[in-house]
Length: 189
Length: 94
Image 1: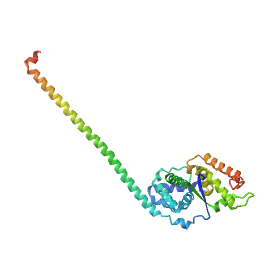
Image 2: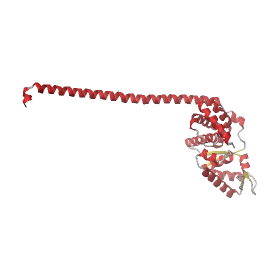
Image 3: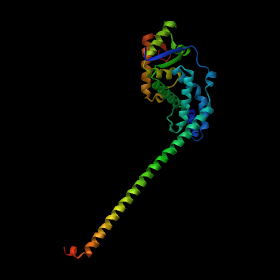
Image 4: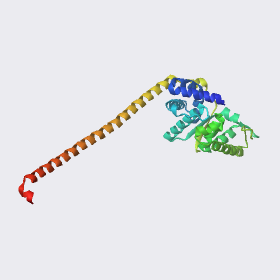
């Protein structure tokens, strides 16, 4: 998590980049990997993720004057552009949306209750996630895989903070009921 | 078939592999190209706007010229008519 001063520093870099686009390079280097991973998780295609990622940074650079300081890190703005680019891709292709998640991250996220972590449980979990609405999956991804707070999630998905919280809690409640699993989340089990 | 396809990956993408796709100079080149195209497009739009107003101005000038011609023709005709009536003794007493 970035402090207020760090967020303001990033904003200052962005302000300077409006006059000299080369200065944007430091933000590019800093956020390329997380943005790439975010897109890759939603496409599962390395080349496609690279294309969308470069389009994301190009859009950011082109519309740099439109960025307004709202107390969120610059990364949230980049995530927002990336999310819009991914949505645009799926709309254009009219394809089923893919979420590619790392097994290790899922294991980190879920603490086992009484059951053991086996293939059957993984299949059940994937089946459950598959049927979740896309909006809920997006929120879960940002919260648990990208470690974003609700303010950032709200900004990225253009929803309210309470809306982001509600979507997360609903998804987690369903998960708790269905799998008898404890989720490491807000100290709640 | 669910609403989404969920895939489970064994490995995370390594940062070395991601680095292969990182190319800031290419991004700058693309940005320069786009800025140039945008500028050309903007100039073209300004040109079209100026052209549009020029055409309107020309049309108004031509229309006004034609109107003036008609007015002067009518004035000449009326002038001629009044001259004829003035010097014609028959019309004078009618």
